Image 1 (cartoon, helix red, strand yellow):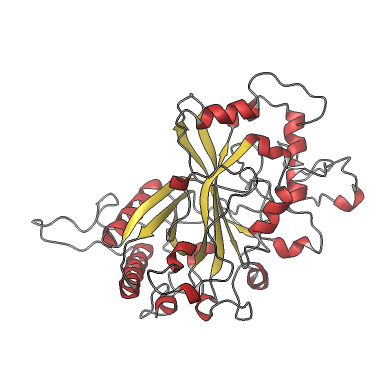
Image 2 (cartoon, helix red, strand yellow):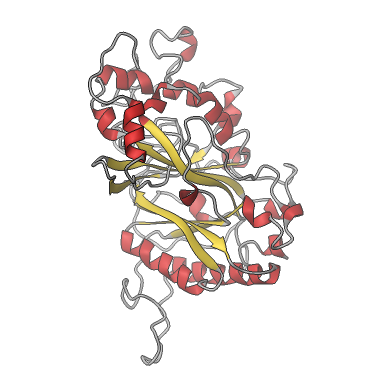
Length: 418
């Protein structure tokens, strides 16, 4: 809060206490927009995305579709063979969904093989499905403890967190993206139908992204978060292979298990935004908290959204405060270059809580070669930032996204369980 300013109405403490004490329906998210990671690109024609590749397609496919859904599952399989069968079934279903495979025609005396909500032939809709594994999958059940990625852990409580166990963690994460909500619902139901004996839903959230992309952008394309600020201006360029290898994909020399090469650490955060509280905050204070102008997205003191904030000429924070969100998240130093992450999240709105307050926020998703050098390093810098007064992380989890499938006889995670 800007020194000397006055505020009337609820304090942040009373607002949070009231929201959590009246049955708030909370959704999924993380480090906020403007945090220098989420860039939009022009909308492309709907198509079927390729499934096979060294990496899972949905991590880097552009543009990011307008609808997203995150689902976390617990695995019911009793042994490694059962887990392998589950991953094989999941892969087969994802392959068909991403290719738009028409549903099988079946004797009407039996239940149909799909919900029918997309008709007799699913249309192209930029559908992608990304599968990750949580730390809990490496417990005693499947004998995989010695194969756990070295940085994978159950997401701890971080600064300002109030994690709800019912909205956190899980054995598997499945993230779906598509142009329309019915495509997401169709895909989710098909995946759950195919794996109903082995996977049970733990938590989920869906939302929208307005075509957010990554890489080269235009001012007209950059979306805004639910606090009204442009959400990310310097996300990684997914078309730059060297950049992706440096910051996103686990490499053969990283000290990770051999099966993990080509995968990526995934951080999912459910961040509720106290939007009514924010809407009663002075514009000058809002801009100081982010370090950007609200309308243009330009760093304070600059004219264009993509102008370099030039922190070197403002060492004492007279123009952009030293604790401004963009300055903490991305100090733009040689040392902080290694902390860059690929963001691919979306906004959510889940109605309102028992006190009549809007339940809105950010479903944050980031991918990084190292959790320690990526997401966690950024979070440490953001600890205690003024923006904490207006947001509350309430769920999510850490996962490791499996390497891609490189042939028709392969399945996601086959080297992990083989």
